[in-house]
Image (cartoon, rainbow, N blue to C red):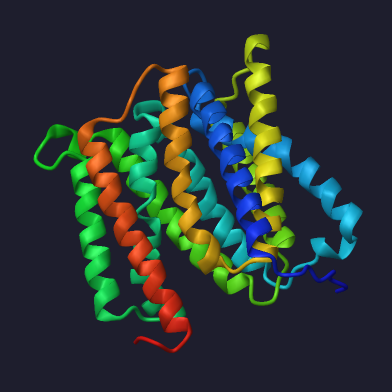
Length: 297
C-alpha cells in the first residue's frame, strides 16, 4: 500500500491533538444531550452511521486500498467492545456530569499499564505498578468511598466504559503495527454502526428523532469525524508517548461545558481525585518513555 510519509513535527502534532480533544469533547456534549431523550444504543448508531460515510469519503480521496484489512476478526472483536463502550458512555453521560465521567475515564491509561503485561508481553515495572495503585485511589475518591454513589448506576457504567476503552486501546496498539490508522478507525465505526443498528432493529427500540434534535445529531457526526481526522493527523506527526499527556486537557472542556451548558462545577472530591489520577497517569507515561529508551525496567 502506498503511504505518504509525514515529517515528524511534535509542535504541530500537539496542536492537532488539542484540536481533536476540543472536537471530541464537543461530540460528548452532543452525546450527553441526546441520551437525555433517546436510548444510548440509538445515539451510538446515529454517531456511527453519520460519521462512517464522511470517513469513507476521506479514505477514498486518499487511497481506496485503505479499506483492505487482514485482521477482520480483530476488528470485529474491537467493534463489539466499542459498542459496549459507547453504550456505557451514553449511560454514564445520562447519569453523571462530564467532569465526573472524565475523571473515571482518565484511569484507562493506568489499567492499560496493568494489562499490557499479560496481553502484549510488555510488563510494567514496580514503580509503575505503585503509580497505578495510587491512581486507582483517586478513582475511589471520585466515586465517594463508603457512599451509596460508589455503587451508582452511572459510576458502574463509567467503569465499564473505561475498561472497554483500555482493552480497545491495547488492540489498536497491536493492530497499528501493520495497519494504517484510517483503516482501524473506519472498521471500528462501520462495525459499531452495523451491530448497533441490528440490535436496535431486533429490540424494536428505534425512536424517530425530533426536528429540534437534528442539530445535535449533526454536531455529533461532524465533531466525531473531524475529531478522528485530527487525532490521526496528530499521531502521524509524533509518538503516542509525546501526545498522551495532552489527553488530560479533556477536563478543561468538561468543566467549561459543564458550567456553560448545565450550570455545574466539579465537586471538591472530583478535583482531588482527578489530580491524583492525572499525576499517576503522567508518572506512568514518563516511566514507559524511560523504559522504551532502556533507562528503566
